Image 1 (cartoon, one colour):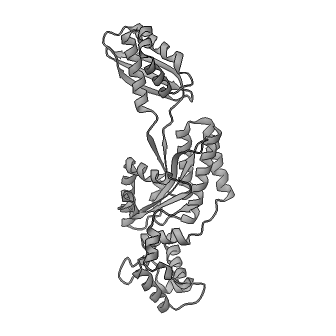
Image 2 (cartoon, one colour):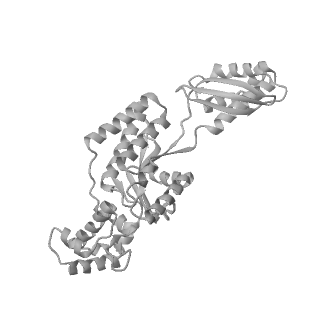
Image 3 (cartoon, helix red, strand yellow):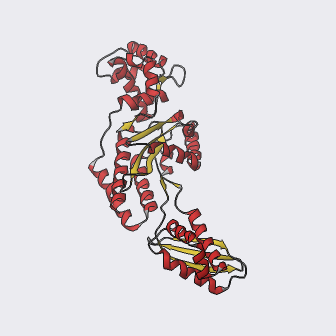
Length: 364
């Protein structure tokens, strides 16, 4: 299911869109289909040959003039053919798009990739592989934003580097390892590093940092009596370092930007892609945009300057949320590319991928 982005379609209806007859809609459809397939403007003579019911080029031109007046199409150059405007694309997507289906082979590819990755990698790796596959299937850039997992822990170790600095090594249940440099109390004896590690290792196994930190903070006095003040401060420093850098924040993964360099036909296309690459580097804006798709079910489509992120590059994004075992939305995945994305093919593919990822999360 595709959900309209906002009230843009209602605004278009109030501008005379509801008065479009079947002939006008068919001519508009041919203009959009030609643009999505070839990226080129199409003229009245060519449109007249594509129509299922014969119509003269002069009659087609009259209809095209009406479509231009209500803002659905425009002429990029004098005496050129017509292209759909971003408003026209929005109308096409919301009111006229006929969705295809994900083929059996593509379904099998997506399911096999997610299933194989889930056996070998943490969630970040699974999502990265899924986005690489999705970008390859759609020839766009695959993007996903999710909350970084707060890992279940297995082992902690402290290694002194300098008199007032130590390396804290954390090993998670999934085998991932994180290192952090800590400032440690002056005059801390070497035995305190071992004592602090033993204290934490007795409490962390199979638990998250948030859980352990909350428990220790609740019994701070008892911890200091067991460890001594300096060693307790080392424990606090280690917990604070990891807790501040893991979990709780949105994480952006982008795959397949190189796909966007294919099929460029003009210098302006190359400049548009350069601007899109700059957009993708602005992670906060991409995260904010993806987060707009997590407010309910269904696929969301963002087109061109409807969003400030794509105001210069004129790009589009198709995105859908995915859920955990409690049916909570835990992230959003999608495809970014030029406005002439193959919406009919990519919308169901994004929707299907989000459902496969959801099933994986619910069965972990």
